[in-house]
Image 1 (cartoon, rainbow, N blue to C red):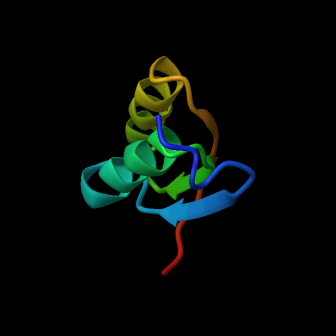
Image 2 (cartoon, rainbow, N blue to C red):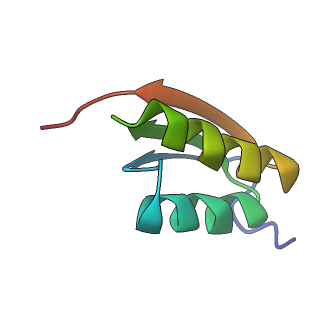
Image 3 (cartoon, one colour):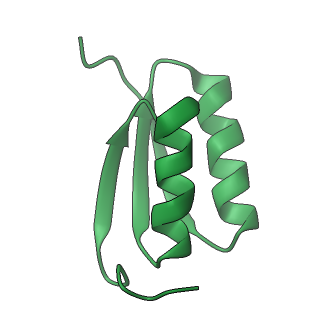
Length: 66
């Protein structure tokens, strides 16, 4: 794990799938803590599980930014 983002908190909208999930995983691997937002609660749970399994720190928020 690279530690270039240790101590940083990153907020990602659309974190329940696709690019948002991939970005979250990458940021967590680099040491960031994450807040993921999405309208898809089950997708958020899947993203959070993947990040937690990889040793990351994540909070989720069901949200609609429209």
